[in-house]
Length: 239
Image (cartoon, rainbow, N blue to C red; front, side):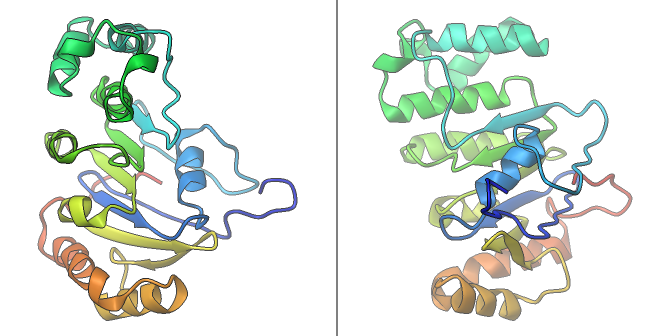
């Protein structure tokens, strides 16, 4: 809650290694708050967050929270020192995210798209086992989105929870789809909910069109049932 306003209501989510969970919902649905609580940056009024002990966490906020006066290299070097990542990983990350030619310029001088890349480079720097990404493609061009998708797919054992409105560019990543509305989980392709039920929920409660989201929901259901990066028996859940 924020003052008298309750943002989340009985929201519960359990994820397994290898899942890429697309977290969908209208503005104000509670997606960002849920991710911040999972990351330990906001405190819930009740309940708990359980994560495998020692699992490195990578978090990207909707607000990038990077140091504008520092260069991309300095931002990443600081995070590398704090999380124990190899200094060599900084240069490799700058190149991976297409920041080489801007690496020593102040972040405040960069375009919003390149600032977004700095934020993503920071989130992935320590090879996190759990990636919590809030609107990661918001300011990215198509090339940047492909780099993001490659970074997510590069570690098939990591867990990724990704809040987005950009389903047309990121939808093919999903192994599972979760729909939130008014602080609650309305539908989840990782449970017994069918694709039909999820599509109906999205169209009735969140003003999404059935036809727009149907292929994505089917993708989430199919991955969950037939493998891919879906839930694997015996893996330890991340809550």
